[in-house]
Image (cartoon, rainbow, N blue to C red; front, side):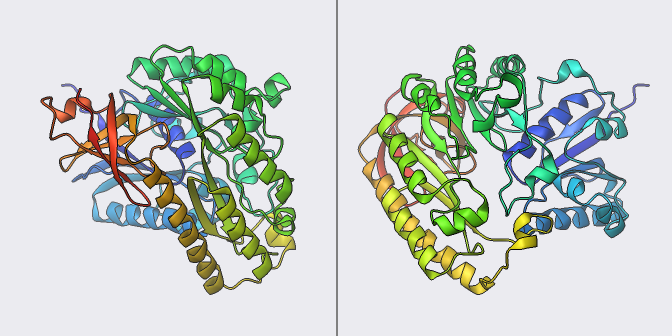
Length: 440
């Protein structure tokens, strides 16, 4: 009698870097378990593995909430065992087991061999460049390094994830080839800091060279860059972006602030003047580039004057995409130990709302400027009678979408998922664009 494999589901919280970690763990467990897609309902699950985030307060609360829900299901007999890995358990290795003893095993975020072994697997180094995709099959995140050598005063990542470690270029190219063989057409390049790539292995910033080598992989049509640190930005990347058709004119570059006083308190190692000059060079050297950034409001040192400067900068820079969050004092960081958090929670939320109101009008104007254009898009899904698409200027899971009606087509709309098509933009709001499909 053949024994039925046990069922396993992984719940991934936090950023896309966690998603990649999950995919590398799953490939090590193939054949040992029947893997249920994340979010799929179940009557009984043998193992639930939760990959947690521990970056800021809200993320920690979400992770703890997910764990508590899981152990309640375990108490009801709906889950056999609950395991936890990732940033939360890496950050609080002693506290979490004491807080929630019902969890069957706790594992960190730097070495995944122990969790694979606890689940009955044996880590196989030959699978290091392989993954079980949890994204739609036509795009994937490619994590090019781990850890961070920066010491931003508000950030806990360096002591959660450790020092910066680049993944060898040949391994990344092989990983991209394997992804392309599975149908992946778009790579989203990620790391704690993508611009630091190569310094430890090659003694130089090698992101531009890596992009060139990845673009030679058959089947990969688009690449876009996320999490680029502004200090010492490797500007040869701009030349690649301007001249390599596979590298999207899209850059995610978290700036966090523009006030010299706040930037100094943040330990960002740039000034407002330097930041403005960098943004200007990006727009000059890569015409039409779309810039995504994030800002922190309410950081120590941000008074009314500094916040007004931030608002003026956002109006001036006109970022096509901008996210923001309020400062969270994180224990163990330099800021928590040396800076006084003097901005009230109410004032932080007010500033956040004001900043996003300014950005909303900028995003709306940018989207409206695209009305009438014909754009090449990739179809992410077909949902409620609408093709959900993205162009070179939208990244999955963080940006708006292009919603196109397939009513004028004679083909099955589901057959277009994962394919490139042309659409004409006919409407816009501050988040999404409305389009019609140009005849295929």
